[in-house]
Image (cartoon, rainbow over all chains, first blue to last red; front, side, top):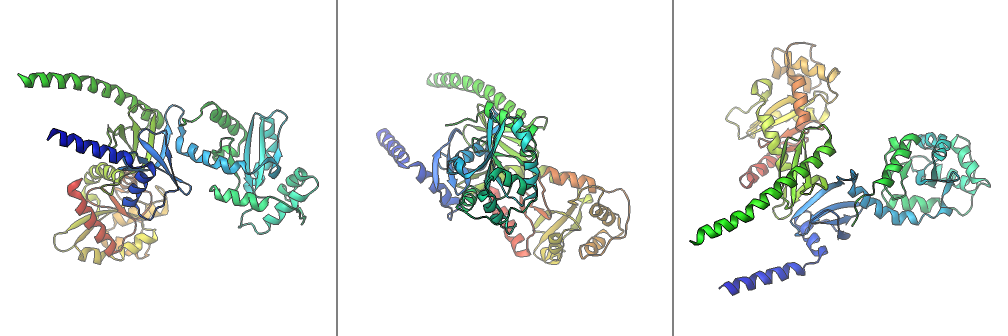
Length: 243
Length: 245
């Protein structure tokens, strides 16, 4: 009798071990939301949980497949959002495809930090942001602009192309940000490509700032050089827990 | 002879575990407190997830790993039972707050016979879906559903919507004034002692973030605007879930 029981227990254990993380996670979703298709399942720093990626969403599933947590996790030590850091890591791969030759870079001599800013020549907050470009540079921050003209600004894509194709690109960029019409220059340009990459990582508005680790910087911080330098120092000194 | 040995053994196991658990509970609790700063932790307890505590903070639930390192916020589901565990726990917090609010401070539209269900609805005179909801009031009542209204003027104190709620409360015939205001009539401006500010605070404390906000008797938030069919279906669902909870 006892042997039979332990045999059954072993059988159950083996059976449980046979399920891959993907199977466990997909099985949990099939009970809760059968239409959901899980793209990736990976180990998570959160004890007892896997990380399931569905599109640009991150959801935690307990390793036994019983509990599903749709939300975000904070590392109490660094007070940082682990879920956002995981999303940031995912964004990094896409961000790397936007090489320096596809950016318009305003950098000080000895930059301490670099940020990527998705921008649109006809967006008022993008213009306000660029008015402070010298202050960002003076604080040791290199600003690397990437074009993402929005559909709600008709003609902004043509302006971006004209700026890109100008003889002095940076000068044309600043002039356009101050309201000058850049004209209609054309040439090979990365505007469509960078716009597509931005959309693929869930960026929907401008200006959107990403720090070097891919994390999004909140607008009220991004728009203030003083707050931004504090934030970038904080990000650098408080790395988020990683696997 | 055997029993005391086992008992002693079990005891020796339990004691260190209990101590370890006390230490980790304190650490986990401290981690939550550090995150929410001066906000009060209303309850701190084991969560349904092994290795995690849960903290009730205002109208939210936080999950924290027993070492206090990781804090999770969001909605926790039990996939096997197909249950929203977060909503269930928050409902039990809300039910105490809602039950403590007296009938004398509600504007009640009840069926003629004994109601099958009661709902508490936070409402705003100037909200389109609240008006639409109230246009079905006879039908809710016909289906045995009592509707208890509390005011939640979304714009907050010292605004026209708030003043309208006060005026309706102070009217001689509250229900008649309520229904008239819900059909677009501007209530005659009146002042008197009223519970509108208290209701607004209660709404915030149970997590109302828009109107209408409909709560079932078990304290769970079941809508938004709901047609009579939808409201009845939701109430039946909540009633069916109750025994297992």
